[in-house]
Length: 452
Ligand code: SF4
Image 1: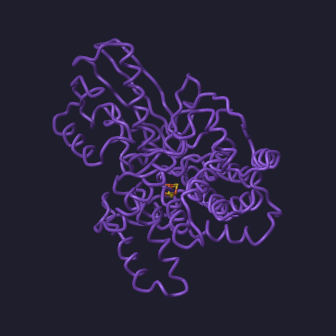
Image 2: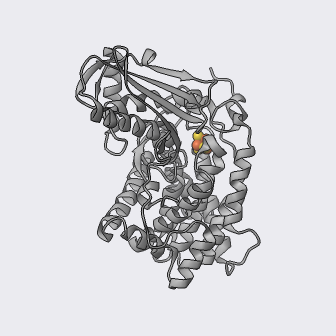
């Protein structure tokens, strides 16, 4: 089983969706890189992209076409400046041409070259994408990609996952395995993660990456807290985080003011995400606000916060996310929102418990509580936009994570339902869920509101 590292799970990307924006951009860029190995880029090449299933059904609201264009131009989600992205998209749409791999100008009319197959689902995953490059009648390269959630991409016919089979000293396939290894070594879950990461790169690089992720999360929230206006997409959703934050500052003495603070942080991140801004997949873009809000709660409300505690939160959350990635799914298109905000809540609950000095058993308990009360949560974004219910849902998910942590820390960690069991139940529940509730915008809230 491939190891899911901190670097795999927490990726810096662009909003609004890891599966519909970050994944397709990465896939298109991968295609271009492979194409470059096969042929010289010249103006006679033509590229066509076919999108299937959920990618086609909600891709317009999620900016999948924009992501594909940027990826074909060789841009990466972690490095492109969001305003440069807007400029490039306008240029491609205006000129009906793109810079393949950033070098060769080829004809490309997005309305013709990107096709939306809304009633067709490929066998590998509901987020399917096929890219083909031709020169005249000759097919130079054709690849089918699956965007399987959290920005992860799989290639049909290749190793099914772009994560390599990397040897780590403490591989774990279940929470029981993870806790058992930590007990044998007499260490915390975060130390297991760090030891595994040490096998992949020098410790200093891992810590620098973790700090970059923590800082990017904070920067995203800070931008969201001061940016007013209406979100793009046509739903006329007003940004609420700045006002919520101001209200908190006015009445921070009230007993429940902490909730307003956490709500504001989570919503600030997801409003930035909805606007196509820079966010961190945690584990997805749609759920990107939960962990930053819980992180901020730790910084402001914990008795003795520290950078070391923040890292412990992140590494522990990473281990919990890896369990869901290995044994269930983090894709709303595969298992509904329980796989996005539910998983983020579980990760944040366990991570916060670790940061606050909880035992491994309490961490496992907190992560379990976080998911147990997210079971069955559907994905039904209105208009295919990551706005309603997504933005508020992150705030609720963050508060639930804090709640789960506090409940777990009041006990010794013994509980009826294990984390492994709840992960299995989440996956089964997701498979049982009708497609209408799995990021297709064909059911639930998505069909209850008349757009005008
Ligand atoms: S409802 Fe949940 S899973 Fe669906 S797009 Fe929104 S945040 Fe993602």
